[in-house]
Amino acid sequence: MDLGIRGRTALVTGASAGLGRAVALALAAEGVRLAVAARRRDELEEVARAAKSAGAPEARAYVADLTDDASVARLLADARRDFGAIDILVANSGGPKPGTVTQLSLDDWDAGYRTVLRGMLHLVDGVVPQMRERGWGRIVALTSSSVKQPIPTLALSNAFRTALVSALKTLSLEVGAQGITVNAIATGRIHTDRLLALYGDDRAMEAAARADIPVGRVATPEEFAPMVAFLCGEGARYVTGQTIAIDGGMIKSVF
Image (cartoon, rainbow, N blue to C red; front, side, top):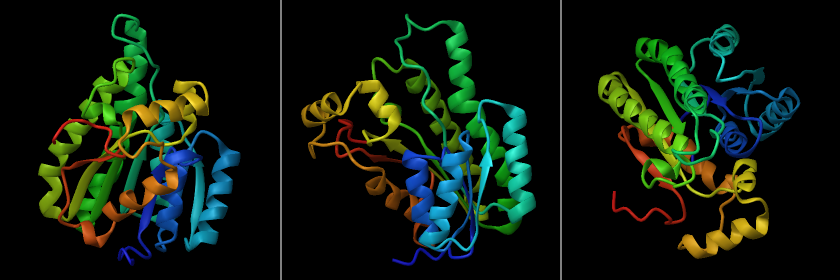
């Protein structure tokens, strides 16, 4: 399926592995020019090479830490210098520290805010003005199933990812008439380093999946990426302000 975005420029953060890497490669297959960012240069350089092999006419790697304002500002400036305007933002950050509300300190909450909310909004703030000028843009934030169904041991994710989704919903109302769509993904259990760290090993992770997920298994990042790529395309121009679950049916709510 041709998504109609060949030659567009996308910035994908958290792209060195897992979900970000898979999304970057899915966009590369659509002929998108790619700026990939994360904290690990070696892995990023490999992703940039893989993106070119997959069809990206250009792909560059940028080391960035979304918890550091100066690092995010530098990423945005460098990407604009090398590519011009960013047409597509796939905003992906690492997960915050696990824990319940009573287990977490106020310092933990400050760190969670910077990891999950502030850095992501900094990215959005950096791309929206040029999207408005050009009358076209796509913003997709990768969040968590916790925005629809709180996870008891992930209080920081529950709070700050939900705040992010609310901010993005509000943004979608502001920019929809200017050709910009804004959506979020409620990410379920996808086989990533983060999920593995939470469960400890593959056996525990898969056992939980069989118990909780209607399809009975954990997904791969490659199963996750096509929906994100679709939301970046021309065919999704009437889809905005949505939080779409990719979760194998795990979330119990109707909405």
